[in-house]
Image (cartoon, rainbow, N blue to C red; front, top):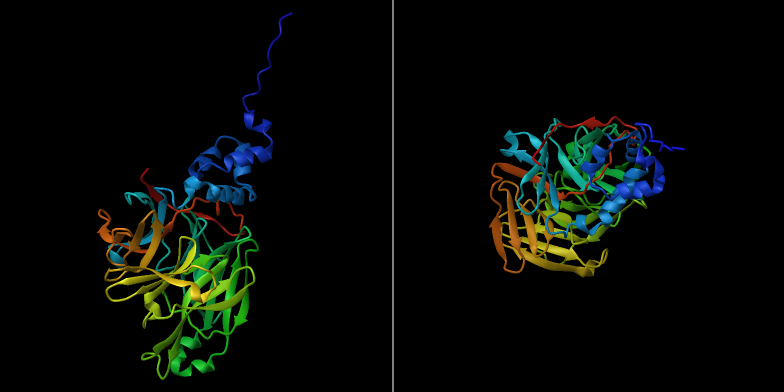
Length: 394
């Protein structure tokens, strides 16, 4: 008697025979572009990849992979740039870190925006007056606009984004609009400041009233996110008038996204008289870092013991006229992002400074190491997710 082998129907897929948890572990180690293509293979794969529980699993496995670490020889860089200074459009760009070749460029129509940071694949852009906040994921070319903050009649002094316990959070330091109208001479009349916190998991705002003896200067650069804490530079002023106010004391303002507590760090002693607008906080090699920008050099300090003021150590002094950001560290080189003059590479050992060629006419306002993420792939966070047009080079 002749036996015949049953062939599966054309609609069947081998993926249905894998335990879902095993299949999820395998897929979570693949690049984002591959996963986006896999969504078109079968309903099983699409359902798994778009599952809200898969997105943090993929992020965790991606960041644990040493090949994706920023110390890899050629990590990618994500940046917020203007073409031909402010005369041209702004764009989110992903570049190679060895040749700085443009891999992908997204030109959104968001208007004038400041950068509130880049954490685990999401870039935050905002405007302090109308408090319009946009979240962009360049990996999948998606964006969403946060709902308005309930703190009407306030001005967002500074803002940032962080990631704790699998949840993205946006935090903004708010001041009453009258604060800016009164000026420094009447600062004591303003006794109410707020921290607004937006949780992606709860897709809602909440606010905390705080005392604020130190003020973050407008558009002083993106904050630093480290150890579940968002950090800004803050300052105190000496009266009598706002226009002639003298900075008499600087601090690092910190807001812990877990405890939701506001705190302050003292800055290094013997650093000279530096305007807070010429000081930046950042993360360098997993340490909180401070960049003091003088007229002809930039000094880089590192807090080697987090929260310990005495552990501030002066690590580098680099002769450069002015640098808006000193952002990236890999091997023995630093990438200096100069506000109006492109990129520079500084070799720590030889103390040699080289200009990166081939990206003239670009004003780079922010840069960080790129992290692939599926966040915003679906309407996981309860808000409409929009698709961005992009120019992809490879």
